[in-house]
Image (tube, rainbow, N blue to C red; front, side, top):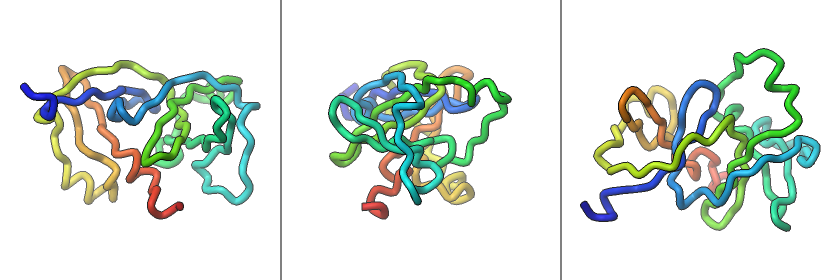
Length: 154
């Protein structure tokens, strides 16, 4: 099996579901205090604000808000002072995305990815690359560049 047939993904949790990004897109995972994030006026609702990560001003994105995923955990989640940030780099730009947890780094083969063109059309989501089924797990593979609409924003 050649390297072109395999890829490594970082599996993370948003709400009750698991999502994946190619490992090359993920720079690091860190905890951040909510008070370290500076809100931006007139920003889209899913842009929480900006923060300084290793000397670089980085926008923080609420991926749940962007994807329309709503918490059903009650108020406990909102009371936490720290949040988990996955720092991603796409097309030379760095973003922090808020995640509920990082579960795995796994190697998959391209044929483990089920294309979902019908679901893409129904959900209006060009940001979904496919679904990975491993045992009883379903992992939604995201195209983070499409999801964040980089070409539209800058």
